[in-house]
Image (cartoon, rainbow, N blue to C red; front, side, top):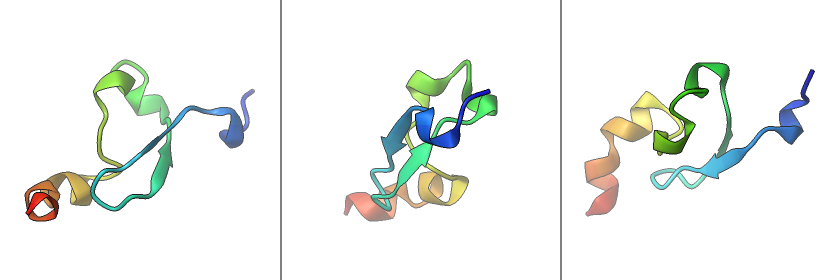
Length: 48
């Protein structure tokens, strides 16, 4: 069993917070950019 601290992490470009790997992202971890659906939806507002 892995500890949460041992999992890979990324930083969300919208909110700037780090987020950890989730099991549901196992197959698409390279494509995951945003930490949440809320950040994904507000990506346009953050780019301005």
